[in-house]
Image (cartoon, rainbow, N blue to C red; front, side, top):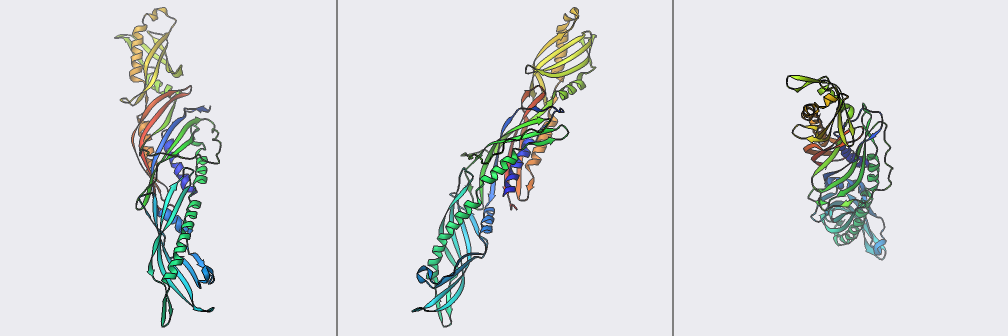
Length: 458
């Protein structure tokens, strides 16, 4: 059970990791903390609960070795489970339980303290109705009631010429024992289905930072916030529900960040009437300014262009990209017709048609010691700003394609034998562009569906 729950939370971790890109910098940088919500329909076959019950109720399940109890009934009995207990889902958050039993009974016949004893073996099937309640403190409780039984073979004592049916005697005992079995079932359920310790373990493991890039020494820290669960739905052979997990994801470069303080208990989950199957997952892709500068250099370094057609050429000899006052600054050294330093600043936005992060609301400033060149600023500004706006951009197509592929690969795997994931990404694109002193952070929105299927967990 421990491994099952930890695996479940690790699957969510893999999804959140997808699409992370790191800065090549050994200083530690804390990129924005992004809050996301992941929802998953979960389908639990009743065979899993049945396996649990069968594992805890095995072999000899009841024994009465006294002739003298129950008002000197002169009756002994032993009860075994003959076949696996069977569960069927009802329509009102209940389980119908079928328990096949073999019973050995021995009855004394006589008077005045002189008895003749004869034993018999017969089979019956008991039926129970168990109502489940998933408390928000992570405990599943049940209230089990008897639903009668049927004979497979009836009990008869064979004294040779005399055959004594003891159906009425056995029925009375079986009804009493069936009521006791209800208490046993409820106790077993309560002890086996307390998930609080396992959720604590998974939560603490999930909160440990993970290295996602050894080359860039980049770490991802996931912090669970809370868990939402929709009501259980019962069908003939399974129980369905939806789980929603709110998480914060943070990216760090440099040394490994400190883990969150361990917890000893998990807060109660929230009961939500309905959770959508489709969810929006947000991750971050971080582009350091060293990479943004490299892109600009490949595009413009040593490039010549004309300020006026046929004459007055300008050459870009140096270029650098950085952040100032929440704007991207492209600083370009030029030679030729205009010799000086140009500062083109803009607000980064995502251009879906170009699949690039580009500049908007651009501003221009020229720094030169030549007063005459300042008169040419308008011509020069028009050319260089237009060129930067139309050509410069940080491409995201490859990021989008690889992120979509890696997420779908993570969605469609059997990470643990019997624990399968099925999912699909419907849309993936950057939605926000954020700036900090070390680089550009693209917040990537991923619309997807994900389903967790249990199938014979071991």
